Length: 127
Image (tube, rainbow, N blue to C red; front, side, top):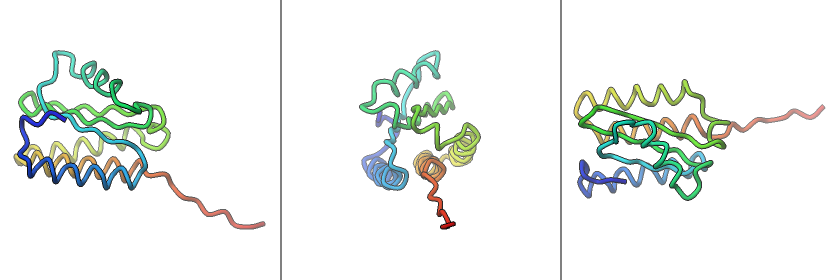
């Protein structure tokens, strides 16, 4: 996580949210806040690929100055998290960011992603 935009208190709050998200959905989360390269999608994909378990990971990359958000999900995550659910979390983050609430937006976005990525438990009735 690049910490250029976040205070130590912000980082602690975000870390707590990330740990709760990981426990909830059993996938790994990473957040990068900083300057994106010219091709922000390629930059986010490279960051995601460098993670310990990219197939089980969700990367949220935010460049506040350029007003960019990229979310990259691994193959295992995509079985539980749709593109539409990712879009909804991005819209929620954008709403917070527009109100100058970077940390609130990140926390809300990570929590939404975790909620949507959480495996659904089904009950099977005996026949």
